[in-house]
Image (cartoon, one colour):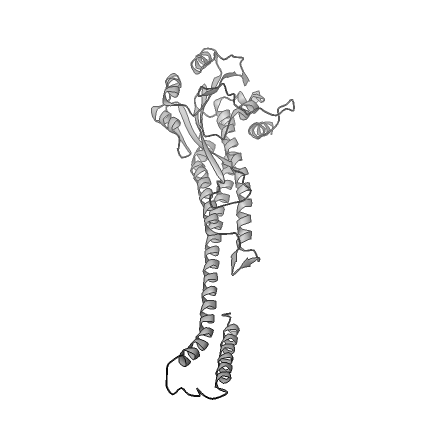
Length: 369
């Protein structure tokens, strides 16, 4: 039970043991792609200064033991080339890590596991519009070796600095090696999915309420249009692209024995896989629900248009009666019936009014007006 508590506590937002908040800001002086470089032995970060580089870190590890954790943010090919050569990373994995825009996946290259995670950040907004950005995506690539762990992050979201601090507060967990860091990052990413799914549920509920609310005119809710629903559906699709491809990698990490994954850590990947499966079910349900909402909104718009056309047709039928009568009397006949009769005008007007009222009553009784 203590191991489960440690694993869950290490990847969820919390306060430091001294009660203060973790500092997740990045120094403006850091111009290099290397965000952090450290050596860990027996779960403890060894003291170091700014002179520690990925090259010296891996040499120290292979001489004295432990493992190195290197964090990079959007490195260029030149910046990553030295790291890749020093750690013996496969060229295909290096290319994926530098250029980003990869699907979530898990691949093995010789003695290195290469994992890709899509990070999702919910964009706060006061009102959903046809151009609102609901989710913002980033990427975290992880190289897991026997004595090293390398993270390559793309995008402005998904910083791992606070996660590193929380892991450093738990030496027992870090002592399990690089696979413990891989699990923590996977759990951290999936926990982010859960938070985003809960926030998107509120947006979908708001749209659904507006579409089916009683305060609408002609069957179409005020302020709701198909463009807003479609935009939310696109954002859900972006979310789905991050979640669905990750199901298989998490299943492999939780079920298939791997030399680079500590057996004590591997069984806890099942917890991550279960949470991911739940999020996937939510996202699929969101997609299906938005399809239904969109179809219902379009159907309501079609019904409203039909009602408008029926009203227009009804009034056209009523106006046709006086138009016909006036048209007849507007003709230049020499001998017009009842033309000189004293009661001819009021009689014709009375008949016209009676006919119009009769048509109006009939159409209203049939629901056209």
